[in-house]
Length: 212
Image 1 (cartoon, helix red, strand yellow):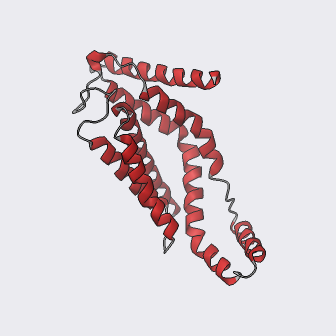
Image 2 (cartoon, helix red, strand yellow):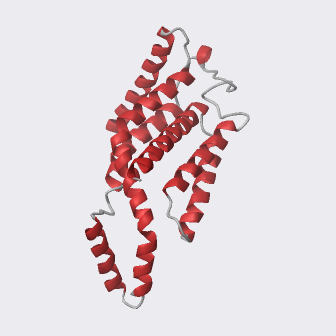
Image 3 (cartoon, helix red, strand yellow):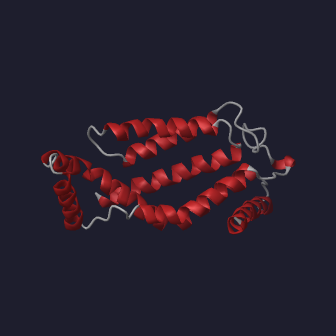
């Protein structure tokens, strides 16, 4: 889609502007530019992320009550659904509230994915820390491990307590999947993913602390 390509090109322009900012400060680095841009993007999306996280956590905390209702009316699924909807109404919870913020963020997240995955780095500044080239995968797998670990901690923080077997399986499968695909992604992209996860992890921690 042409509109989406404009968004990808816009994200690439932001990467370049971020790099020029590091250059003007005397330490030209695409790696630092990606980190700075990630933080700016997460700050802009922070209000949407907050609504999404609160909704996810609220739904996770309700899982034991939902399970109790389903067990109580296991022979009457329609009654169980009515009781669950009644509970939502009494607690002022909209089960779809976490979807809208995610849908709003998705085009930007996908655009930055494509922008960084094929970004034409200047070879003179494509090296960062132990990474020979931000266009290539991490040769010693540090970033894939960090992406999997940060994803696991973040999903664990929002998961339901108790014996929800499906949630437990997803909490293990998703981090492993993210780590696996990160093995072949450009290092610059995985840096974005790790920094984004760390930022959201800090944001979630603050949200839960304030809610308590």
